[in-house]
Length: 251
View 1 (cartoon, rainbow, N blue to C red):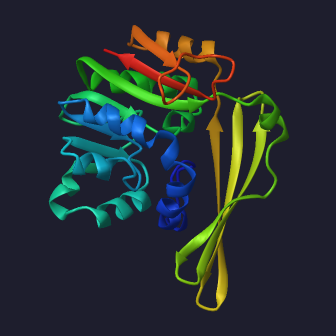
View 2: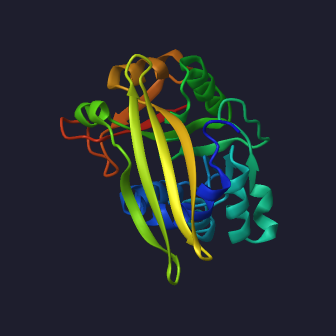
C-alpha cells in the first residue's frame, strides 16, 4: 500500500468524521471557486467527493483523481454510474488526462502528502501542463504551529460519533515530528462498534510541512511564474495570526 493511500476502514468513516471536523473550514471557499469557473475543473485528491459531489450538483464540468481506490469506491457509490467516467485513480505527480482545465484544485493538504522536493516540483509542472492559459491551480497547506509541532499529540481522541444508531466510531491521533526532514509522522487509530465487538484499525502517514519562503522557492523552481499566497479561506493577506497558506498559481 502506498503510504498516502487511505485504507478501506478509514474511507468507510471518512465522510462522517470530516463532515464534523472540516466542512465549516474550507467548504465554501472551494465551492465558490468552482462556481465562478465556467470551464472544465479538476479536483486532485477527490477522495469520497466532499467537494466533488456538491460541485457536480451545481452543474460544474468537474473531474477528479485520487490514488486511493478505497476512497474512489465510496465516491462512485454516491454518484450516478453515468458520471463514473469523471473520476479515476491517478497520482498528482504523473497523471495524464486528455482535457485541459481552467481550474485545478487540490484541497485539504494534498500537497503535504508529497514528501520529496523533486516530486513537489514534478507535481506542479504536471498541473501546469494540464491548465489552459490563464488557468489557476489552488491548493492549501497549514502554517506550522511550532509549539504544537514539537509537542505533538499522544493518542488524542479528536472525534467520537455514531455511524449507525447505537454504534460509535472514535478516532485517536498521535503525531511525532521529524524536524530534520520537515515531516509530521501521524498515526490515526480508529475504533468502532460492530456486532458485539470493538474493531480497530491503524494508519500511519507522513505530512510534509512548509514555511513561507520555502513554498515560494518551490513554486519559483516550477513552470509557474505567477502566484500568490493568502492567509485564510476568506482571502485575507498573510499575517502573524494566519494558520493556512492558500496558494494560487496562474498559468
